[in-house]
Figure 1 (tube, one colour):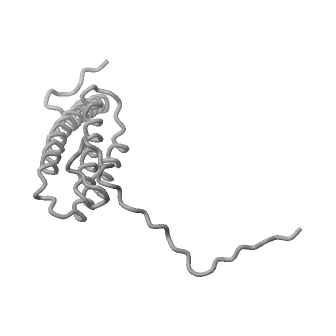
Figure 2 (cartoon, rainbow, N blue to C red; figure 1 turned 120 degrees about the horizontal axis):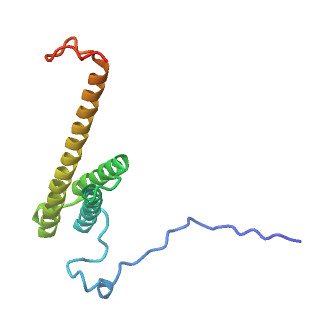
Length: 154
């Protein structure tokens, strides 16, 4: 059996992909133009919305007193902040886009709500740990150095 080998003649060129025609832009977002990629305001809006969704999810779990994976949410929030920082650096004229300002205002409101929920959780943990510390001290102490005097003998 004879095997045929194909040989390429000349350099291989990548195919040219044309831009989307204007008619293919979704009508629901008339501000969007074809070819908006990373570094555009649309990219920033997507990053802000993902970060806000993560923060709102954690806050909802805290408010419902559900079990919350703090490590997982911490990683997701850190990643979202990194993405937002990178997108903001790559974007141009982001300060003049009212959509970005509105999304950042919504993100700020979510962060305030999240901070309040986390503070409540932290205060509760501090209170429970103080109760545990007092209980341990009472069990280990014989009352010698207490202001009420030694504990009665049993």
